[in-house]
Length: 127
Ligand SMILES: [Zn+2]
Image (cartoon, rainbow, N blue to C red):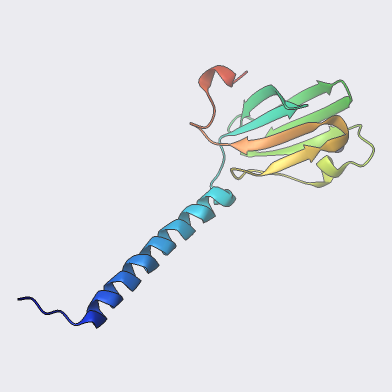
């Protein structure tokens, strides 16, 4: 008959839970934007306007029914270079480059979200 002190069993379970939590914690950290994104996805009024690679420097003029924005992609980051919105929150937001980061221009109902390869269907990418 096997006799194992219950202390070790408890310790094993504790260790397993600790490792599990650590794993989830790391995952949550990655999900919360520690990863470099691959694309800037622009939506206007919830509709996809375009998806732009972050590894290609470019300037994107975005015409919305509410106003005009100029998105600049440079050195793996995206930022709002110009906007004719009243508050300029989007311009002041600065550069984003990590997955999940968002630039919002509320007056223009515009959102720039940093996404990763694989999260974006190839047919949704416009060049
Ligand atoms: Zn704005």
